[in-house]
Length: 559
Figure (tube, rainbow, N blue to C red):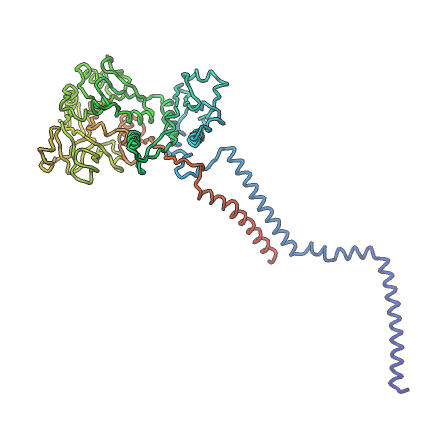
């Protein structure tokens, strides 16, 4: 055997001996491990992957992200619940209609907020039944919403629905003959009330080719086979405001129209009282309207603040003129205002007695018409139609911003500017290029170009003042015809209200509001608005919440 083999055999023997020793030691260690297995398992579990995962930074960050997301979603849900609760508790609503049909003007809300009186708005029907009436439910719903807006503007206002079947004495307390569509406005301080009928808060407006016309125009258009549109709108804001102004006023202003001499008509053939527009607008602004029959009235009551002689077709008797003069004197207390409209043409029906009263106050009514030759100031021919005029007096605030229109206007001359206790001043004048067309003008024998233009502007309205009493003379009864007062594109209504507000001592801000136009539709919002709302709440908002949560999660996860 070689030396190398001998060494190899000896090395193998030694290694085998070492292996046996190692196996013996391992067996002893294995026995000790088995004996201590429960304790070791516990240590290994605590130091193992599951526990370490829970204590790792990554899991802490991921858990925080999930928590933030959950908290965010919970906050959105909580905010929605709180918002719904508050909106229900305080009756907060949003008007998304194009013309703000369920809102009131800011000026209206400010006026209502300043009323220190308990006002009750009674609906003569149950809340469930009132809006469900044929194809006009949108109008009744608008009326109910406007009533709620009034109550929001002043906490002393109450909206009350009355079931008259279970409360039969209610109708008796308010004059009887009430219907389910009636609305009553009552002041607890003054005890006065006003009943608003359906035809007052549900107003029909007529249109031909997009232009608003009167009922008579629509009637004749229908007879001629022309198409016209009827637009029913709820004028609840105007009617409610008017009633509240009337019943809460502690010192109401009284306006009286005279009668007995054909007042209020343009000719003997007319049966329409043209001053109905003046009556309507004054009533809507809280003025109390009365009518005085001059033949049967011995003395014009001193509590009358304004007297209106609206275009009489015959002259007043001397005794009736004296009644007017005595009322203006008011036993030396003065403080009265007469509005006088001469007849549009009285070359046959002379009015010497009324003319004498006017001339005593420095006012002379001319027998002719104001004609403006400049096409900028007339929209038709020179025969007196659609003459644009200008207000130059203390009552002109806001008037000249829109056209001020009149037709068949008789001019006035001022006999003096000041004499004794009398002072005169122009109120409304024509523009440059005006001419005077006499009543005896014959278009077949006289040419328009041959008339001499008037150097000074002709006066379409003037005022004379004696102490604190006044006479205001207007050259045309058409200045305040319903067609001009109802049209928002003219300023005639603004001027009329300026006169009454200023001379009655009321605030100068005009509360007159033209009702918004209402186009019947099944929806209270437009289709585009509905689609926008659906997209925001169904798609955009949920995606925003999910995206925000994912961004927070991944930023925390991989930070």
